[in-house]
Image (cartoon, rainbow over the protein chains, first blue to last red):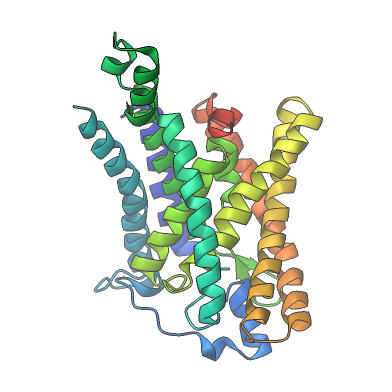
Length: 92
Length: 243
């Protein structure tokens, strides 16, 4: 993998970790509107492996979010890396 | 502005799902053209010209450039995913985060940019319960179709009028702000169509909050394009996937 890609990935991991400790806990724009207008309650439960970006079993919210964030970075990049490898394998 | 399950009427989310699926099919076709080239044996085939042209159309293989481009899409996706985790405070006790549609489209072109944002939304929905899986089509429509494809053409128009890097940054900033503002308006419209709340109130609230959030979108987009341009000078020119 090229040096540039490695640098962008390291930057992504750094941003995810730093964001985990400094992110605002306030509701986002849509949630805030929903809360104000009184329809936030109609939000259904969404199942997910790591709801609210918390890696299960990690003590401390910042660390749990950082772990979830690093996994998310790996997952998003991994999907494209896998696609590239599969498409390349088709060539042979 | 990831819509959770339960906010939209099934008919509204199904309609937006179909629209997004159609848009993504187009994006995949355009990116396939970009990352593949005709298979070698066909290109040098001695068979009749028509027959070889027909088989060339059918058989395309990933090019070396294509492999690098897909991996670059992955790196941009990873960076936008990470940046989206940074919820910055906005006045009135609310927060915002990057949507990244314009950033992805400026660096990768509109079609690859829309795919990148869609994959991020898929990962967020499936693994992190951020954005409902039942309304994924609506979220893709608002943030990838409006954000990346719509945003790209605003950026493109401005960068044609104002030449050079000033045009790139001014275009990206204005497109980034607009992409958030228009996506917020679309979300309000979808909520009202679903009968969740009245259009006037939802629209007013969504637009006023996101007019502010859009400023941060513009700032982060410009900073990220500058940063990616420093890492790889070819990156910020972007236009690779835009034809």
